[in-house]
Image (cartoon, rainbow, N blue to C red; front, side, top):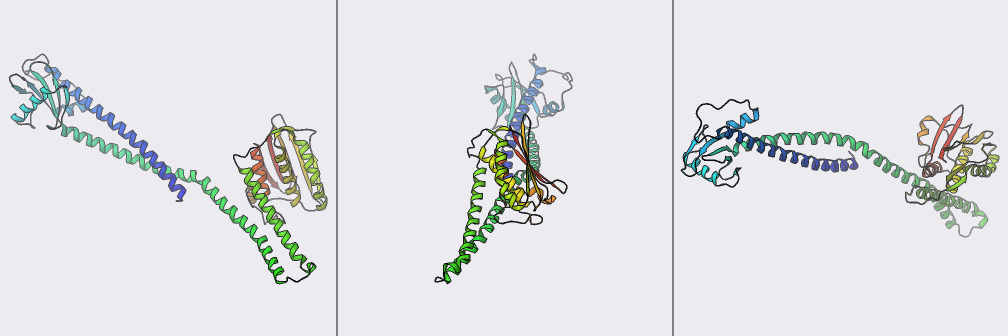
Length: 410
């Protein structure tokens, strides 16, 4: 398990443990109070039939059908008639717990209590006292309560442990889902650093090697070392281009970066971008076609849109073979504007399609890296489109070639 998943599980279980403990404690308090209330009601029922009698009643009391809980409680309740003035008492139920002296002392203490229901900790009893002469007193041992509370604690502890085990299993499963985006982001960051370092290492090595040659021949004429100087210049330009693209990508990805939006004509922007690419298409002997409406007004950023259209056209022209055709199309409806860039003579393998927008992606199978290409162009384009609230999709087939389609809100 990765450190992120472990931390997620730890915090999650801590929070769940606190919540479950509070809930179990609340249930325990409620059940204890309910048990004491039930015990009091049982004690009241035990002495209730004795009200109105000045002496212990003879014969058996009327039979009732108590619930199981009340029946169990009544078995452990001692019922006593007690006259405080004379000290006389009569026991109405079996007494297996107290001697005569202990019982007299206990009855005297109960009568002196302010509350008619309560617990005597030293004597280890719970009592209920009904007024009148003589007093009607019900007594139960706290040992019975302790056993009942112990059983309750064991049940609640088993429920707590079972719930914790269940939530632990769920947390481990959820941690895999929750930590996956973070782990993927960290992996992409590591890959980004590795790729950037690799692409910077090559021109740096060229510059260092050329400088070493120049230092070994300080007296050589300028013309004879011109090729080493030119090579260093080209390597430096490549480094500058890569660093510029990396800074652009970092700036686009900044969530707090301000982006000015305004009403503009996307058709005019697309026309301008196509005109700028005409010279590149001519040099590669590629036909550049456009199918644009007279106007397509939407809200966006002119600099972003210009760079998006230019980047997609440049990418299509780069990989279209000589004699091929690239087409720029723009359509619109009331809510959306869609433009696509299609190059008919080049395709992307199906297994590479999901990765074309990854940073430093370059497919070696069908698209060979060309000078000045670092695999950041499409990543920057995608970030810009999403910053404008749009979407980009790519498809590729032998019949239609490769199509990049961008959808923007109007």
